[in-house]
Length: 290
Image 1 (cartoon, rainbow, N blue to C red):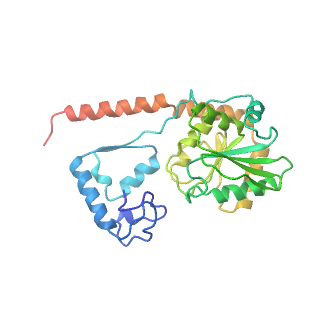
Image 2: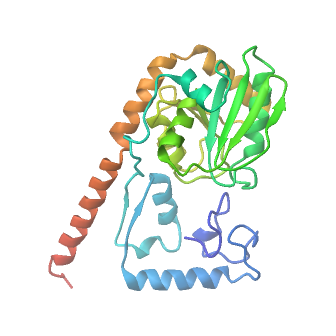
Image 3: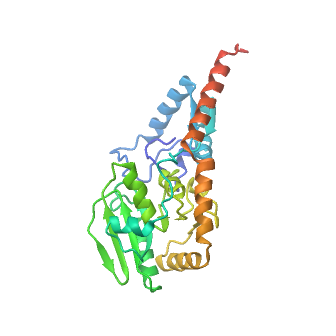
């Protein structure tokens, strides 16, 4: 929908046709500002193609409708991403799993799963790290931050550890690492509709998340998780502590699993795509009124 960047963040130039790009280095970086012409070319191609579009969330659909290419589509339909809820499921024996992976059995464990966790500025790793370090200074129980998807050296501070696991090729192993955790933490600056939040809930993990982009459509606040709106580590730590101290954890884990299986299963997604394809074929088979 833009003339350049993979994500416009707070920039709304794509609504006017781009041009005078404020940041040519946002991935994928470009050397010269042809953003206005690029968007015109995209719009011409899409208009002549008469495509149908599926977006995983309402937020992204509305972004397209605001953009210069929004009128190019015959239809834009929201079909949420689905996860295999048979692969991602709750495992009750957390302490057994923690022993298997060499994790402290009695720690309060938060997990995050992603690619290039340390270097990707959109993931906001430093804020997650500082927030949990701040939380660890406020409680007697040890706090562990489990980062899955990248190798990294163990980070330790007062009552706190951050431990890294490389990308898990086997789904079974990833499911087990989710289940080693008590909560899932996701404070991305921008993230369209992350599957990891769905996977975590499918495993019964309540989610703490930054309510940006399509993420508010993935979580039922106070039922399957909470939204953290602050950008200050100490304030986030205080919010997490308040929620953890007062929630009905057993009920939330059940609600997370139910929410994922009901709304975000792979079967639901596939069914909705099949219906979309069928509707498109029916529309194309009808005689033109022109």
